[in-house]
Image (cartoon, rainbow, N blue to C red):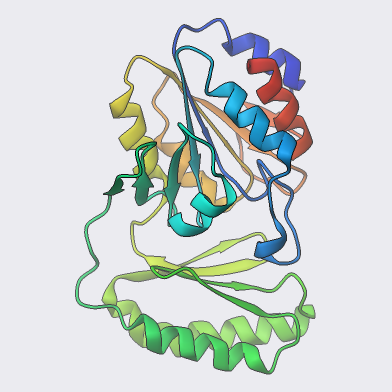
Length: 250
């Protein structure tokens, strides 16, 4: 563990920095429902201030959809990578697809309907339709009910895995996404785009492991929060400490 100020001091002398951050649990605290995890005005101002720093490239990489990220983070000059980093929008609004389409047309409508049917009988089990992937949030559900529902969902969805889909577990969430659609894809894209920059990635859960693993040898991996169980050289205790780090970096 390193204080936010010491971590900022360690890297801010570099002439060019590629700063990549997860959103939920990293920039903002985790909440009971995804729509409640909104950035405060101070965070938006801090991101705007960071983007004024010469030589700093700022990217937010999230499992959320691009539309959701653009709504939450209307900050000029910010790069956004949604759908676990496989859909990127640049500061000019151009969308870049980083992963090839899955084999065949994925019957998302049927899968979403199946997920809603399973969740309908479970209080606190929430279905998030992200367009190109799906998430079942069970933070508000009773543990026993959630476990049974998730097992049922895995069983019912198994026939659809032939379309190139896979499950990934996060903090009280089970996601279904195209295989290979992970944050490491975005890390590879941005580190190639700015090869001379010092790359670092901040993330808080298992969906960020692909990003950490994709960092080049000179990259810095920073785990966030009390729930983080991975192994990274650096660690910040909360999104509040992340804000302090960003301020020190700016």
